[in-house]
Image (cartoon, rainbow, N blue to C red):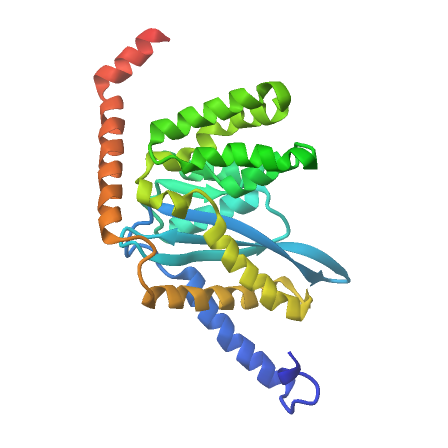
Length: 297
C-alpha cells in the first residue's frame, strides 16, 4: 500500500480510479457465465481476515468455490465476503453460482461446517458430499490424548491405502471396531462419518487423492492469507474481496495454461460412473418403483 500511499506522489483520486478499474475486472470475473461446461467436482472453503467495519475491527469470512470441469481442468467458480459462515450466507453464495450456470455437480468437497453442509444439501440435491478427510482427522486428533494420537492416526490411515471401494469400507468398519474398546468416542465418530468421509470411493480410483480432501483449495486460501498478512486489517469488506479475488484470478489464469488436473482417460471413467448413476436414478424413479414405495408406506 505504501506505493500508493503518503509520499508516493499518487493522489487519492488516482488511487480511487485504479481501484475502480480493478473492481470492474473483478466484477466481470465474479459474474461471468459458468454455462460453457459442467463441473462434476466442486470444492468449497473459507478463510478469515480482519476487516474494519465502522469503528470496529471484526473477522470476516471469504468463501471460495473451485471446480473441476468435464474437460479435467480447474477453474475458480466464485468468491464472496460475509461476516460469518452461516447457512443463509452459504445458501446465497451457492444460489448465485447456480444462477450463473453451474451444473452437472456430482461431488461437493468441504469441511463439516453446519451452515455449509446444510446449504450444500439444499442446493445440490442429487449430489454426494465428501467430508474433507484431513478435517475429519483433525477432529479425531482432538478427541484423544496426545500420547495416543500416532496410533489412532495410523489406524485410520490404513483405510486410505486400499484401492477397492469394498475394501475401503470394510477396513473403515474394522478400524472402528478395533477402537470401540479403547477409544469409544473415535469409534462413534467413525461410525457417524463413514458415508461422508468415504464418499470419494464411488468415483474413479484415479481421482480419489484429488477429491478426498479440501487440500487443493486450502493451498489457494494460504496464498490469500499470505497476501492479506501484508495488509493486516482491511479498511472495509470490499477491500478484502478485491485483494482476495485478484489472488484467485491469478491462480485461475495459471490453471488454464497448465496441464489438466485429471487426465482425459480418467474423465472417461468418470463419465461411465455418472452414466451408471443416472441409469440407477431413472430406474428408481419409474412409475412402478414409485408405486411399490407407496405400497410400503
